Each structure stands twice: as C-alpha cells, then as structure tokens.
Length: 347
Image (cartoon, rainbow, N blue to C red; front, side):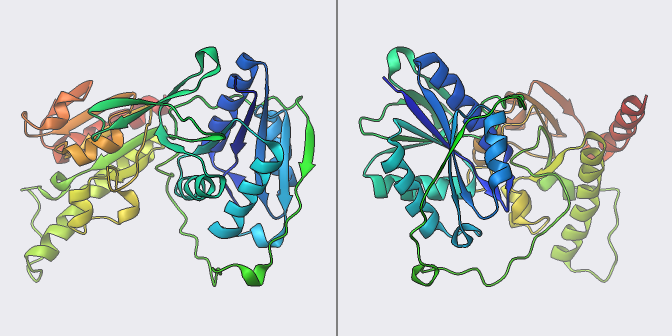
C-alpha cells in the first residue's frame, strides 16, 4: 500500500508553477486516503518561502535543498538531487507536473532510480493501494490505463487535469534539509544568460484560451498593401486576424493559442502552438477561431472542459468536439462578440 507520496515543486526563481500545487494537492489526497503522508520536494536557491507555501497546499513534510548550483534549471544537478531525495525519503510514488522541466526531470530521475515513469496522466485510481493511471493515447482517441511494477512509481500529471487546493495558511510541518554534494564545475551545462519574455497569459496555466488557425488570414474584405508579395500579404492579413483573437483574449483575461498550421505559416510564434507538437492544455474554456480541428491540434486541447468553435466551414472537424459552434466568418463574429462580452463583464 502506498504510504509516502512525494510531489516535485517546479518553480522559476522561487515562483511555483500552479500545476505544482495541483500535484501536491493530489499527493495530500492520496496520502490521506491511504493513511500515509505527503511531502514536497523543493530544490533551488533562496526557496525557504516556497517551502512554507508547500505546507499551505497540503505537504506534511518538505524536503529542501538550497544551494546556488540549483538556482537555474540545469537538469543534471536537479535530477541528481531528486534521486538523492528519493533514496533518503523512500517514497512509494513521486508526482511531477507535466511542464517542460517536469517531463525532463521525471525521465532522468526514472533512469537514475531504475524505475518506470507514466506521463501526461489525467486520472488516478488508488483503490486498494495500487496506483492505476489513465492517460490519453493516439491523439486522445483512446484512454490507456497503466500500472508500474517498480518503486518508486513516477507520474507526470497533465496541467489542470487535477484540482488545485485552496491554501490553508494555518498548516505547518517539518523541513528536512538535504545535503547538496554537487560541484558546480562538474555540471556539464551552464546558463550563460537568461532573457525573460514578458506579457500575456501563460498557455499552460490559463483557464481560458482563445486560439487562431489558418482562418485568421482568410479575410476577403481586407486589402493588403500593394508592395507585399503573396506570403507577406498573408502574414499581414493574419496579423489583423490575430489582433481580433488577442482582443477577445484581453477581455476574457485569456491566453492566446494557435494551431500548428498558423505557426508553420509564420502567422504567430511557436510558443503559442497548441497540439501534439505544441502545448497540451486543459482550460475551462477553449475558443477556437478559424481552426479546422486537425487531429494534431485536437490532441492538445480536446480535454478542455468547454470548447467553442467559430468557423465558416460547417463541416470543419472542430465542430464534432465543440459544445457550442458558430458557423460564420470569425472576422465578422469576433468584433461584436468581443464588444458584447466587454459590456457584459463591465456591468
């Protein structure tokens, strides 16, 4: 029977990813049901405040390693510390958020600990103490149920697939400090510089996402400047279309997403791509504007709680997965929709 559950807290310079608290909250629920304890693993520099927050989100204990070598995301020392923590704490289950950092470290830790890893999990069952994980396969067409016969079991949890607990500031617990025996000079990678790109809502954490597809550039009423070639003219039209998408996103406090077709056409940067080769998201509301609904895109957003599709093609595959559909030109629909929502939310 699983007794000890360890949740890895993914953070950037002391600011935790929201999905880390989802993982810790789930760890606390499992531990309570199985009569065990939930622990949080916090690695970094100057992260004592993060350790205290972990108690508020359900940790009974925090394993803490505070050292300059762990300040930046360098997989080698972090994976070493995860393996060290697992060997000292002996957890039955380690939970990671399915962030880019979490996926990397879960895989490396699994190798170091000679165990298995179940990735992108959207549901867990622990009846009788045996963990069974559910994850989508074949672009979400099927659900696979998995178990792992080795210990510790390692699982990465899809962002927003599990509830984030409400923090309880009255909670506290014990902190176990881990020795960091990693020499900075022995680490193969080094961070030469960091450039933070600000602005906008994070796709991974967004509760509402407004996405654009190739249809953002298909506005027959727009006449691009005459000195542009065909590709440049399409990009110019797409910029106007994505301005409408951004306008609706701003009103809703939403993140802006995009299909792979829009990214490949250079209409928007890759960081906005949702899909099998982009980000996998699970917002409360997903509004797809001019998105046809290719299977690769559906793989990244079909677990959204509510999907709204806006497309002028009534046969577009996206309508098969949408709860609400608007058949029409997004360029004609988005401006009055945005204005109506602005008035409604202001009132």
